[in-house]
Length: 348
Image (cartoon, rainbow, N blue to C red):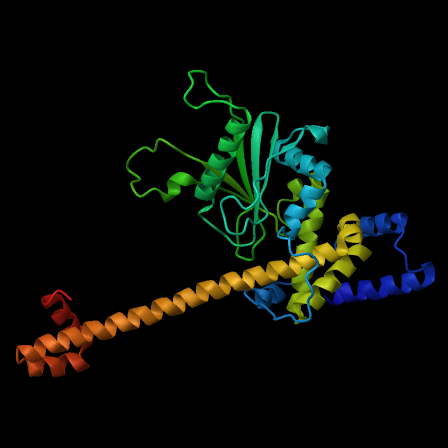
């Protein structure tokens, strides 16, 4: 972060000489010079992991802004989406208008997180961004894929009960992972990994390609898709600011300013700065809500377990008293192992 702060001072001095506006040439020059500016602070990342700093004074830019930054970037820029497809598949398609976007809005989940779906060259491409490692992605994609196929069949006015086979685009499922849990450069998640009976050959399979897009990973992919590369840098800068203990809103504002000054996602931040800040703050709010729900669920489960344990012990005590086994009752009160034996004896 010290290196970033030093770079900021230099940029401020430069602007005082050249004026406050960021010129196109200056941005391109900064972009060429920024290699090596970002450094991964391992200690800072560890401090940041799991931390949520409460922010206040936030006025939402627009209530309908549910998209996170990853989806926003590629949804706004079809050329970038085509570049991402080419980078993943080793192709060289040039016509972004050939992309048929078919993303389903809030169809399967309460909150659809960064899903992108489009058809190109006979493939149905399902992309999802995840900041939490989730081994259930294959079954989620299976549900999402079924929804997509149903819509496509309805749009084609085809009948599943007809004798003519309905052509379907080939699915390609990809997860872009940038969570803080260690993950390999690339991993294949399979639906069959969740099957209970592994001794039987399954009649259905779905594979998900999971790519680690944290800054410094999958360099070949990043080199082929500059928007993905700059997104990874943006996330890394935000993590370093937060590791310095800044409040979330201030850290994100500093991140946006730093990235604009260094040509990182410059155009999108220039044109949609308020929207980007709003959706990032909303993302932190949603994450906090989800963690709160999980915590409340755990606490409620503990309370229920404790209540059941008390009732179970009381039931045992009543049985022992009725059978005049007072000595067993006294021993069970001080000997957990003997208490368990009595639970088994009375099938409690």
